[in-house]
Each structure stands twice: as C-alpha cells, then as structure tokens.
Length: 606
Image 1 (cartoon, rainbow, N blue to C red):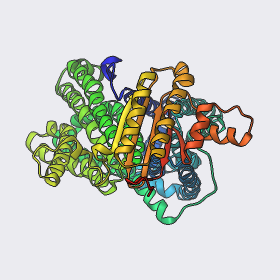
Image 2: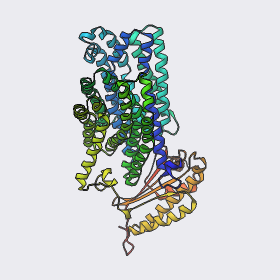
Image 3: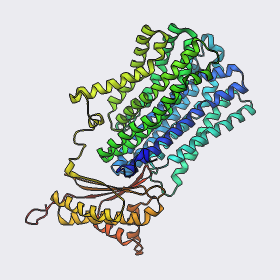
Image 4: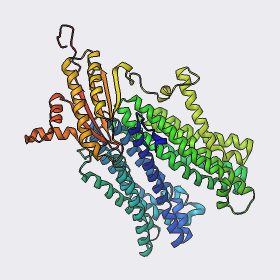
C-alpha cells in the first residue's frame, strides 16, 4: 500500500482512515445495489409477470422513502461531524437523538399516509388506464413496503451515527443482515402465498432486522453516541434538514430527467437506442459504486475536519480524493475501454447497429466514472462545509439542467449517439461551471487549490499561530515539547501556560506510546495540532491506537481516590481544567484548552 500512502508521509494516518472509509462505503453501496434487485428476481421466478410489472410500477416508492431518510440522515451526519470536530460530544448526542426521535415520528405518520392512499399512489405511478389491471397488486406491494418506512428512516439515521462513532464495520454487516433477511422473508412470503404484499412486507421486515442489529451498537463498551432526551427547535431542525437536501434533490431530478431523456433517445434512435441506454444505466450504476464510496467518505471526514478548523487536513483529503479517483476510477475507465467489445458481446450476441451502440455506451460509461466522482465529491464537500445553496445549485445543474440540455443539443447534432454521450458531457459541463465560478470570484484564470476549498474568512490560522506535526518516537516528544514552550512564549503566554501545555503533550504522548502503540494493529502514530488564537491555546492529539477515553479515565480515577491513576495522567488532570475526548473515525482525539493568560515585561499576568 506504499504507493497509496507513501512511507514517511506526514498524513499517512489520515490517508489510511480515508481509504478505509472509501472501501467500506463502496462495499455498503455494492450490498445496497444487490439488495435492490432481490424482489425483482424472486417475483419474476415465482410469481406471475403481472406481479413483476406491479413491483416495477411501485419502484418510485424506494426513491420517495430515500428522499425522507436521506434528508434526516445526511443532515444529522453533517451537523454531528462538525460538532465532533469541535470536541462537543454532548451536543453531538443531543443532535443525533433529536433526529432519531423526530425522523422516526415523521416516518410513522408518512407510513400511515402511504397505506391509506396506496391505491391513489399506484395510479399516480402508472397503474391507470392501460395499466389499471396492475393497480391492485401495485397498491398491495406499496402497503407492504410502507410498513417498513419507519425502520428505513431510522436505519439511515443510525447508520450515519454509527459511522461517526467508528462503527462502519457494523453498518456494513447490517446491510448484509438486511439482504439475507430479505431473501429469507421473500421465500417465506412465497411459501405462505401472500402475493406481492408479502414480498413488500418481507423488505419491510428486513429493515427492522437491520435496525435491530444497528441498535446493538449502543450496547458496546466503547461507544460514544448515546440517546438523550428530546431537545431541539424548529429552526435547528430546518437547518439540519437543509444539509440533507443533496440526496433529496438528486432523487427528484433522477425521476424527472430520465423521463425527458428517454423521450429524446426514442425520438432519435427508436427501440434499439433505448435498449442501448438501458444497458448504459446498468453500467453507470456499476461505475458509480466507487464514486458514491468516495463521495460519502469525503462528506463524513471533511465534516469532522471542518469542525476542527483544520485546513491542512482538509487540503490533504482533497488530494486523496483526486489520487484515489485517478487510481481506481481511472483504472476502471481503462479496463472498460479496452474490453468494451467483450462487454458489449455479453449483452448483445449478434453483431450490428445495436451492438455498436453498446460498445459506444460502454466507453461513455468508462469516461463517466472519473468525471462523476469529481462532481459528487465536490457536492458532498460543499455540504460538509455548510455551503448549502452552492450545493443545491450544483445538484440541480448537474442532474437536471445540463443533462437535458446536453441530450437536446447533442441529439440534434449527432442523433442517438449524441444522446448516449450526454451524461459524461453534462459532468464535464458541471466541472467547467465549478472552475468558472471560482475563477470569477478569485479573479484568476487558474484558481489555486485553496481557492477551490472555499473555506470561510478567518478559517485558516496564520502560519505563525499553529504547530502541526506527527509524533513517532520518544526523541520526537522531547524536541516537540521544547517547540511548544517556545511557541507559547513567542505569543506572550505566561510561563505556567507554556509549561502546562508542554507537560500535557509529553505525558499524553508517552502514555500513548507506552500503552497504545504495542496494541495498535496498523502502523501507530500521533498527530499533534497546537493552535493559538484570541480565545486561547488549543492542544489536540490524535492517534490510531485502541480506544482510550482520557477524559473519563482521569475523572473516574480522581473521584474514586484509589490511587491507581497513572502518574503522568494525574499530572495532566492537575495542569488542565478543560479536557475533552472524542473517539471518531477510529481515532482517539484529546483536546485541551488553555485560557489566554499573557505576561507583561514586568511579570504581571493579564
């Protein structure tokens, strides 16, 4: 893995965390894609084709449910990630609990609405006039699915919470639990002859099985998240939901835009071109698995780093996004282009115009991969740094406006082939729009990487107001301790603060090396970040060792009076009054705040 992270990379620990998140989110997306086709496979094999058509008609239910669950879960994840970056665990728990309670209640009300108006919804989705015979089975399937709506929303919220609380493996396993449960319950529905209602109910019950497994996270010893009493406001919840509009807008535009594009492709190429586009959608879904994985990892980690006000780490993750995109999506692109004819032969055995179109759409899907990754990660990044309006505008332009315009213009020039090329072109137009926006605002033809980060004014620390180093040995500790004292004195802080900061760093670093490094499964490391501002001095230590809650340990041992406290940590407890601990993204984070006590030339503290 040295080609991914480097051997002595200052940011190796952060890069590995991001890579782990990318792989985990990609695997979750693979499981979700696989789970989404189970009902169709079982219905097509064991029930009448009329029931399969009914399931297809009711498919927009998944998008509708996804809009609600996405708004709650993504909004909560974004806000909680920012609070964790600030070290505010209590605030994180309050936001998570409020979203869980309100999201569950909202989903329960909407579940009743979907059941009561299932017939009308079936008609709205297409079971009317010529499809009237499908109205009843479609309504039955909708009723079955609706019963799982509360679990779907709560699963989404809880999954996001677990990911913040270093529980990504549990989330991945929960998806597998859901898929297996869905298969088992589907076969039970077939055995009991419950029709499509039973198939929908099986999917609903699988969501409850997944939710039960996710909730077991809160019984684990080292969990950080916990449920608290409901405490929020309408304004806060509205702001939280606004962060989640990316998923909602994307799902809405993914319903509207394909209807227009399908009509355009049929106009220019007929049924053959429509068949090629259907195959293209399958390929795009496959390619987007990695793009979604990178985008979700970006959203989660950038949110935490934004809360920390860590512009250096944010820039490093941006570098990781481009590196992993080039390696993985670039690799997929090259393979698809090389084997495009072979892939086309798997879909269309006979040579001819349709097979040529499939070769073309395979190449377009290959080019689409790296471009859509850049667009998706830009959108989730804007979401993570609270640029909500920019994020919403970019989603609408990319998913609706540019796609429809590209299809119309390219279709008029190149016919069906032009429409089939519209998706990568609309991604390219979106990236050009991003470039133009920052070039115009910064008045530069080529904006710098920091310009593209678009961080708020005052976000970045002045170079002289920060120390950011990695610690790997005892020699590093002694050298950095001296640097901390010089740093404090250079900013006019009193000798007590200078010595306290240096000693706290020494004792925490030595404690981690002594007790944490030997137990670390990966290459151990400590990341130091010391920041001076008008509010005082903030010392932050991050390590990738096993969970150790320094704040809780010091508080419990001091209150117990058993004398078992490690002397170094006892000294830290005596020197620092404001210690907080956060375990997030599989790292221990200790934050110590010192008040801004300065010393004049006469030695008087001010």
